[in-house]
Image (cartoon, rainbow over the protein chains, first blue to last red):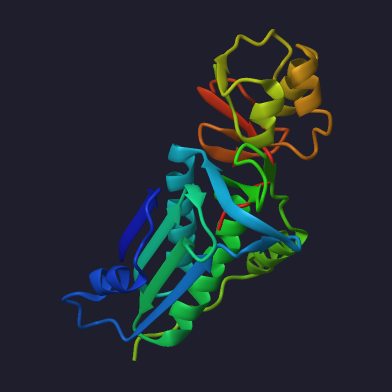
Length: 165
Length: 83
C-alpha cells in the first residue's frame, strides 16, 4: 500500500493529490477524498482565521499509526493524508484524506475511520482569531465530546476485510 | 528527561520545553503531574484539572498510570482539536 503523510503550512490541491495517487495505477477501482475546510464561524461567532499548533514528530508518527490501523482493517491500495498547520483562513482546506481500494466499501470506511481518529488523537490544537479583533487575540477551540464518541465506535470488532473478486 | 508543553498548557506553564530530573518516588505520569503542580503557580494553573491534560511519552499517547522510567521526552497538552 503506498502511503503519503505530509504536514505543511501551505495550501494543498485536492485534484493534484488524487492524480499523484492514481498515476500509472490500473488496480485502483475506488478513490474517496475527504477535505476538512476552515469555516467562517466558530461557536456562532465570525472568525478571521484559525491558527493550528502541532507537535511535529508525534503528529507524523500518530497519523502513520492510524493509517496502519486502517490498513489492517481494510484492503487499501493507497492512502494520502495532508494536514496543515499555522494560519488558515476561512474557505481554505485544513486536512485532506484520500483512500484508494479495489472496491468502494474499503475506501469509504477507511476515510471515515481516519478522520474520526485524526480528530481525537492527532496532536494539533486550533486557536480562533476572532473577526474584528486584534490578531493577538486568540482563543483555544475546545475538543468536542461528539468526536470522542465517533472515535469510540470503531473500537468494536474490526470489519471483515472484503475478499478480492 | 525533556518535558514539552503545547497549547494552553504551554501558555500557563510559560515554557515550551525544559529538562528536568524528577525526584525518586515520581514513578508515573500522574506522579509527575502532581510534582510539577507543586513547582510554581504556572504549573499549578496548567495542571489544576489533571484529568483534562493529556500526555505522551516518546511521542505516543499514554495514560496517567504510565511509568516514566526510561522516557526521553514527555509531553503535556490539552485534548486535541486537529482534523
